[in-house]
Length: 282
Image (cartoon, rainbow, N blue to C red; front, side, top):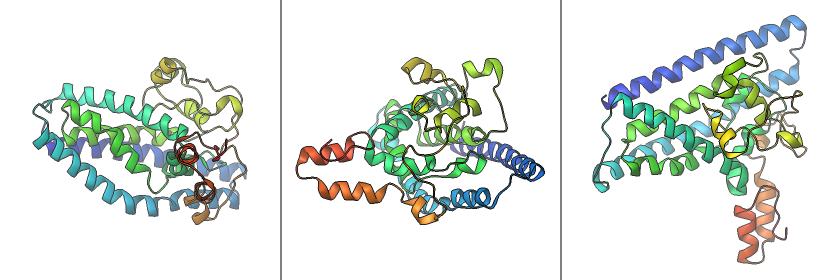
């Protein structure tokens, strides 16, 4: 496989899941209109979710450019070994990218400085396809760091970026209430049912089902939770805004307040790297 073939394959996967997501969105809107449930609040929530793409994409252009440059320099000049770009290597890279995503995602929930960005994705009280594109502006930077080990193993920059894009693209169709449980697939794959749990703020649903494509990582590492009653979506704290700027930077005011309140290196460490909700003294 050449670099252009890898890029073309990743783009095709992204396009395919985009079309699936678009089809689900149209069905969601049609169903809501028929039932008379498509309220102004729902429409505004969709617009706010879509608006997060403005700062995210502006930053992502630089992140992806920097990631490719960094990965290429490491792979081509500093690492004396490499894994050839074959179909087997592509499958291995996808498998490892999915495992990497699990830990990238889990750590983003457990470390407050990272949660300031990922919380944007969880801030909607609705669950629909457009929620899937609701991202914090700087989320891509953490992904760049977590995928570095794949480059050090010997995968090419194109294969690492292509595999990570495929993992993200797969998740497009997960953000919906339209699709119920999918039988035996629930044991292996991440599904809309599993991902609804992940977006729930009920106590038993918090910090569960981090997987990208496979749900087996959650089963293996003890973070799996089956969907029982319909989750209450959104952040555990009281946040329900349709103001784009408030959504983009929802966690930063409290984070900045706690940073200023830190009186020692220990306080600062708790604010930066403690679990979300930690204050300098807690």
